[in-house]
Image (tube, rainbow, N blue to C red):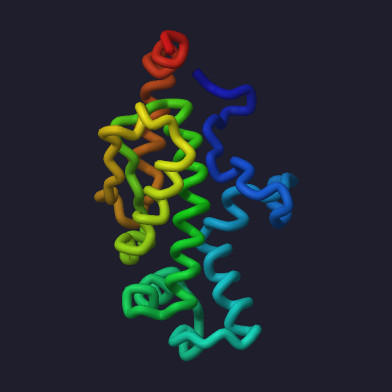
Length: 173
């Protein structure tokens, strides 16, 4: 199974905020506008420019790694940014859970450095926005693919789509 233009499952373009920022895809409020590495860095940079106190103000260049480290050290701005990220990701993940009822959700990338802050925010959204029967035994797990956050999930979904297994599961309900 393949989309008309080749791609399917563009989760980064799920609308998270109708009044949100314009996305490079032409839509408004896409997940990528609030949850991409660039969006996270931009938010921190903007808040620092407005005078918010943070140990990140000492950084020459703001990176996701630095934001995670600051959050783990208790920096209020960094914690807030990671929690908001968790809420945005949680909303998108809840949609996927409601569509596909997975056993496990993998979270990959450097953002896992702050998983003790990130995961509870994601879990709250999942609990509030997913069907309870789908979340009973759901596992939120750190991916082993640290630098390639979406690779394992994308590969599994693509394989299931080509095999027809995913389509059959959706049709069967």
